[in-house]
Structure formats: structure tokens, C-alpha cells
Length: 103
Image (cartoon, rainbow, N blue to C red; front, side, top):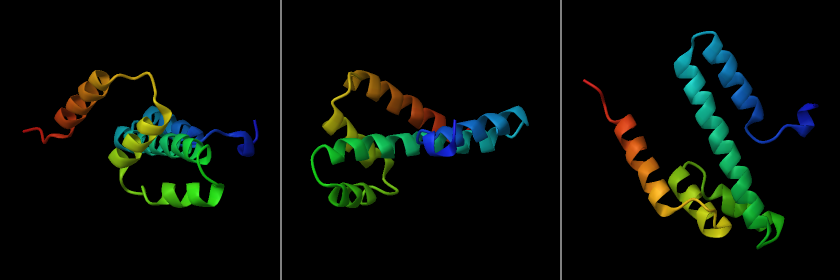
């Protein structure tokens, strides 16, 4: 597959795998998070382009830069995925407990 056929976040995931295999677990996690952010940005842009022209969609996407929770909330509102609120709440609790400092 050529690089023009790569899906959003694909190269980041490949890089994350390589980093993990070399023992750079922190770098692997960072690249995985970057991949997830790229995938979400692409998914939100797709939803926005269904509702407005590409220039306005790109502008709306840009307004969510550095606001992952806001971007996720906007995508959920537009895409209406089959993921329940209970599942998202469970994820949020896990995310918060994982981010808490460990003694």
C-alpha cells in the first residue's frame, strides 16, 4: 500500500508498535495516543462534511484542536455511535484512575 492509501493514524500505530518492540513503552503510548487523536479528527471531519461545506467543516474541526474531550463529545453527538453512555463513563473512570499519580 502506498502512503497515499494510509488511513489516519496508521503510521503512528506502526511507529508505536516499533517503539514498543524496542522497549520504548512511553514512546509507544504517546504514538498510540497520537494515532487515536488522528482517527478521531478524521471521523469528526467526515461527520462535519456531511453537514456543511469542506471549508466550514475544516474550520469547525480546527476549533476543537487541543480539546480531545470536546472533539469526542462533538463526534458522539453527530455520529451517534452504538457506544453507550455507561461504557463511556466506565472509560472515563478508568482513564482518570490511570492518570492519577502513583506513590
